[in-house]
Length: 285
Length: 277
View 1 (cartoon, each protein chain N blue to C red):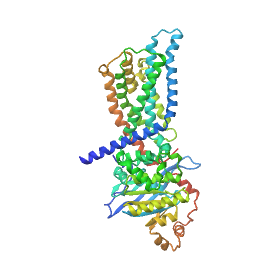
View 2: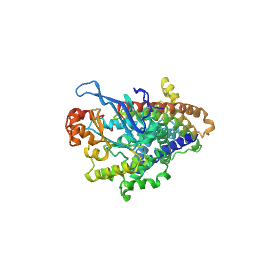
View 3: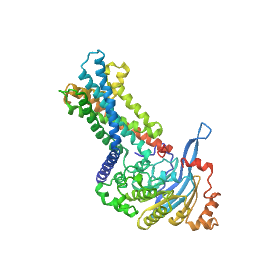
View 4: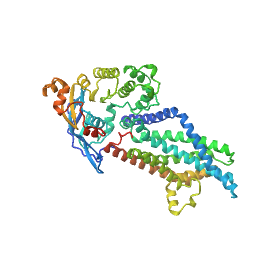
């Protein structure tokens, strides 16, 4: 069974060369009740976004709260149905072939979502089963991956609720890597972390880039993170992708000396300046 | 053929993962579950005491038989409660913990996901029902000389398949309404039992409710269990209860999956999968 029912889609052309992710005119809007009014109005979360990520490439999408970053990640994770356009992962359409896509992608989001009373080892164990990995297959693999992300072995059996945010985020990275995803979706993986944990997580993302065949889509509002980790940086503003280029070209194009200045020139506003409308959009986008 | 076998293996491993997760969670919350079990025992005792109360106020009845019949009703009610609670948690608990998106983006089919959830619910619910029955029967020193416990157990197990289908339909409610969906599931459980003769014969119900009783798997589960425990009926004599259960199961399982699927699509269209309220 597919998720195609009720989705308005365009006919997708054949897969382009070495593309890992192909997104074309992808649209998503949510209906939400207006403040002070009774009726529901559509809010555009993504307004026709198009881009391609080559295999092995790391692309960062920069945007403020409510810019549509998480919506994009959710559409690629088959957790949302688009209202138009298409998205494909290694040639598999996210709407028509969701199960094929699910085998290829995994995700780390801003909230390290786990069963809090269960230990990291237990959380990783059952999650791996959902991807068809038996306990025999994960017996050695889970301690190995936890060690690689810098998680202390002696804390493996502690409940998640007793771990710091940074530790939990390392377990989230381990969970994503456990299934060997071809495409790794990182949705603000370092937001809310203390500086040390942030650096450790960024270092690990760098290591994945260098040692794995993974394609990475990193959604962030950390300019330095985007610049240091990604091959290309995109600017997503209010559901529209304004640019997607290597950071230095982006700066050159907007006559800017820093990525922050380039962001300002592209969007017409300061990076940290958020309006009520952004807050409003954040609920869904 | 090989690809099919690989897929089937992965699906079974995935369903096993759901069972594994529920086992861990039950282990972690075992003291809370024991406290909840004490409440269930107390609730069951209040219901069974009704027979003694009727006798004390001058009513003439076979107290032992009525108490056993009430006990069966209360145990089935409690069992169904556990079953529906586990299935409702398919969505509700995961939404609360924030894991729901990770579960729904895994390549495990929804059928096997719900099957894993249902399998654990049946095993845990049956074990709990046995403990509840034994504890209350011992408390009242109930005599059941002819009881065929094996047949009663098998009837409840067969009925569980139908209950799973209905449970799958109700478990989608928290997807549609994160705030009130769980409570609506209990409405389904109550409605199912009120028309099924949980503490009384179906014949005392108004005609239209008796019609609904014929569609409820709980009716046949209660009748079969009472026949097996009170009259010692063997399984072979309970075909009248077994075939409707198989038929209802054959319809309710695919219907339950279809309803859940529609709810999932609705949540993916409207973005309700994400909400953690």
